[in-house]
Length: 162
Image (tube, rainbow, N blue to C red; front, side, top):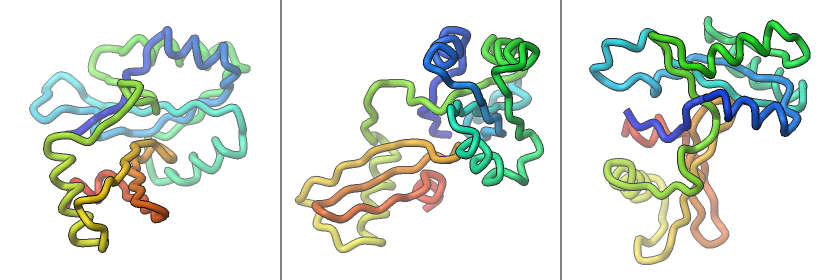
């Protein structure tokens, strides 16, 4: 399963806290479990926020996720829980809403599926440049495609599934 997100680690958490992030939304994250992984029981995604309104919108967006939770940094016990999660406890993988690398380029299977998607769903010519950007929105991976003045946004799962 394609997973471009970075692990949530103590240095990453410390950097978020130092940058003023005070709310952290946790949700289930199925792409975090590799096929055939017999060790990982669950994978989570933690997204940092500075604004309570944005954190609440994210929380409402994932309202049916039984593992959703909002950590609040003004509570010391919540900070402790975040550092436990950042320590990657046995049986769990915890990711953050940051890409592993500074830049992302579609490659391999994703690039092929991207070409096929554009052939089916757009009238864009393949000889012109299409810019692709990957980002997260409420914990969902989205690919933004730009072709001249046009832009479309496609959830990654939709692209990969066909």
